[in-house]
Image 1 (cartoon, rainbow, N blue to C red):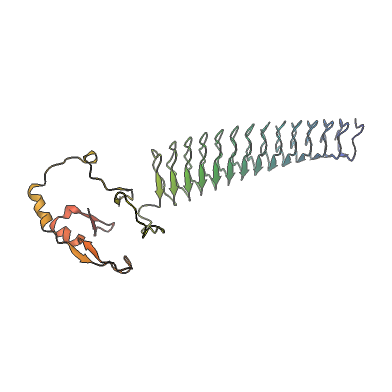
Image 2: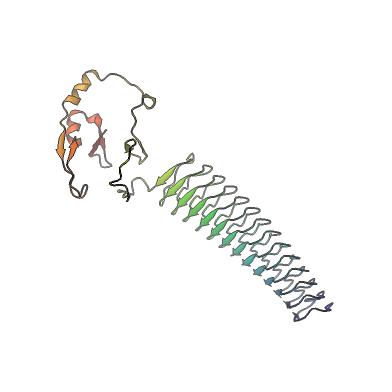
Amino acid sequence: MSNTTGIKNTASGFQALENNTSGGDNTGIGSTALAHNTTGGGNTATGFAALFTNTTGANNTATGLDALVANTIGNANTATGSSALESNTSGSSNTVTGLSALQSNATGSFDTANGLQALLSNTTGAANTATGSQALSADKTGGNNTATGFTALPSNTNGNDNTADSFEALLSNTTGSDNTAVGIDALINNTSGKSNIALSSNAGQNLTTGSNNIIVGANVLGNATDANVIRIGKQGTQKSTFVAGIFGTAMSGSTVVVNSTGKLGVATSSSRFKEQIKPMDRSSEAILKLKPVSFRYKEEVGPDAIPQFGLVAEEVKKVAPDLVTYDDDGKPFTVR
């Protein structure tokens, strides 16, 4: 042992703390634990070759075979598990728990990995949090990612600022950034799309490269070509929509309509959106047979019982059925 002025050190095992000179407050337990430490202080190494290469790094804790074995000058790292932070050299303030977690990390700092092979391939990526077996396992240089769940964000290499919460969330993402996926298999096929939000199981499953999408609801899959699209709820599953804070608010603008697929838009009369335009001729006579009426909606539809004026779809169907739209049961619903 080469210790000269180092104090408060504990060494137990073959060549443990063998080269320490002035480092203090170190604990090396296990064969070659902290073997190359010279001036580093406040380190705790438990296990064969734990913190083996450390020279000046301080305040590191390594527990397990080859944990932090390559660390030289990195500080304030905590590695628990065989081969945890095995390749780390100068990365600092990393916290790792699990076999081979952050195993390839060299200089990345402020990473947290909990689980088998979590952040396995990370080399320089910083400020990542991976919780779950193989979470963020392929990440190399991506930073500020959060992955929670088995194989969450496992293919990410250099995407940044992603959040994946649940089993296989953002499974295929490689370079996409600023995505949020919450739910089993949410955004599972996204590879390079950016700024997408998917909430619930299988949400956004069909998205691949599209960006700026918001998908809310279980099994709301979206389309592979979606970009800048908002989808809320699954057609045929949700039957009613309630939005507070709209009724009684006056504003100008266009009439809003919803088609049979649930797509929301505004009513338009421009020829730019029409084709096969021709005079109605005698067909217009049907319009003259329509009978406008006054009415009140039933209480469950219009609890305020406000008098209304308009047409009755069933009556319009008798005169001009092409002007009527129908619900999922084939019953007259409204007038176009």
